[in-house]
Image (tube, rainbow, N blue to C red; front, side, top):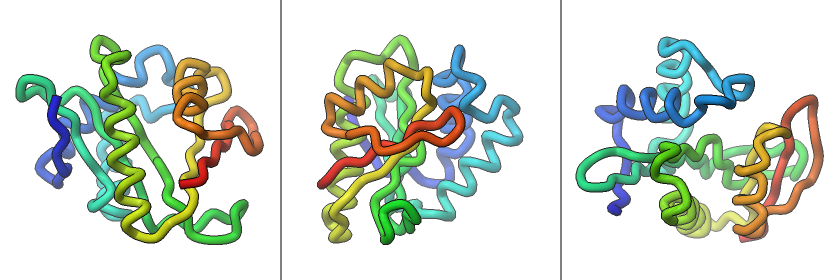
Length: 152
């Protein structure tokens, strides 16, 4: 497995990964390719330096979209936000997600950030348990979203 910086040429691949990765969790995701593409474009505009792709044998199998300039109203300052972490279902439980998150943590630390924040769907227990193993703690809930924080 190899991690590399994402660039705008990857957007279509990221859209496909995103749509495949959210199968069964559509209530938490954009389901139309045009909407997913607009979202990927937004992620690149937010912080292209915070995006990495995981490859296995030359095939893109996951990505992380981190944002080192996110102002968290709830935390009262800038935090590192993980907007997306997607790993194709058949490549999960191989350490790819952990590697992507650790890479984005490095990026946040380089920017001098002390906290990471993310939101996860309240019934996405697999993801919540994964984040808890990485040291995230649940902070609050809003509708069907759970906000989690980790000190870096």
